[in-house]
Amino acid sequence: MDILSDIKVVELAHSLSGAFCAKLLADQGASTIKVEPPAWGDPARREPPFIEGVPHPEGSTLFLAFNTNKRGVTLDLEKPTGVDMLLRLLVDTDVLIESYPPGHMESLGLGIPFLNQTNPGLIVLSSTYFGQTGPYSNYQGGDLVAQAVGGFLHAVTGSADQPPMGTAPEQMEITAARNGVIAIMAALFQRQTSGKGSHIDLSTMEAAISTPSGLIHPFTFTGRSPIRGGSDGNVMDGMHLPTADGEVTLTTAGTGGRAMEAWAEFLEEPKLTDAKFATRESRMDNWEELHTLVATPLSQRNNLDLMRDAMAKGLV
Image (cartoon, rainbow, N blue to C red; front, top):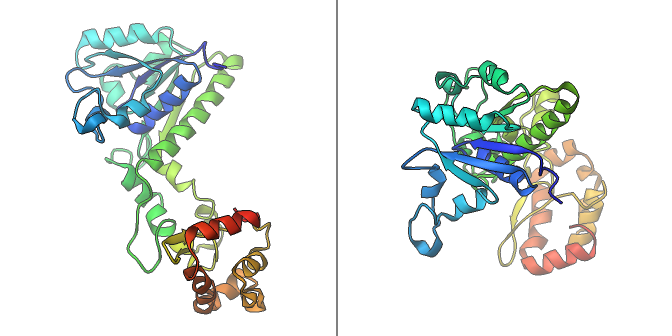
């Protein structure tokens, strides 16, 4: 069912977050037009991998994946005729997605006040790495930059005894895009009663910093910064440990609040139920011993057997 079949979207984005946000709307039936500059087009067209390994503007698998179900048009917004043609598109558009630096739309004569006059119901989503305001708003960014500033490199991925490690490419952009879709859907709902559009300020860094469930609230309430790899006492949550044929990352998600009891049974290590491991604080005090008790049995089993046993016991 195309739930957005009566919605028109114009994508004026050169970021993956903007492109993916528009794609998600298009996949739900929104009539979506992607606007690209002449000659070079979207930068994603030049990103590998390419179909059959041959660089081609129509062959980037990244570009193709992030732009399904869209139509395309080329406009030169550095010229008055290009701006005029865009305004003609926007007269009956519901959602405009743009990813220019703050102030650039105004320099083109396309500031929010003017767009509101042209189309009072227009919802504008501005996607940048650091938002429209604040001390970082004019900084350049990237997915890895968002991971770093958003706390992933410090507190989430990798191990505390190793250098910071990034997560999979484009994850922060994808996360921001999903946040953008949620905001757009809320704005569409609000418009049904108000009749007015909205301006959505989408920050990739804010999307990154709000994503890990255990990152913000410990620091907010205790002033204590989490440490990546579970070495802050969150045993089983984020521990990266070697097995007989690889590595595993552990979690307490399927333990029903009885993490130590569940993993003591799974690893056949009754010492894990000792009172010294009962609380977060006591686990921190006895971290080295706890790490050994968990790592030793894991190192003797292969990944597939561990997964099958964990599934059989409802842990994953």
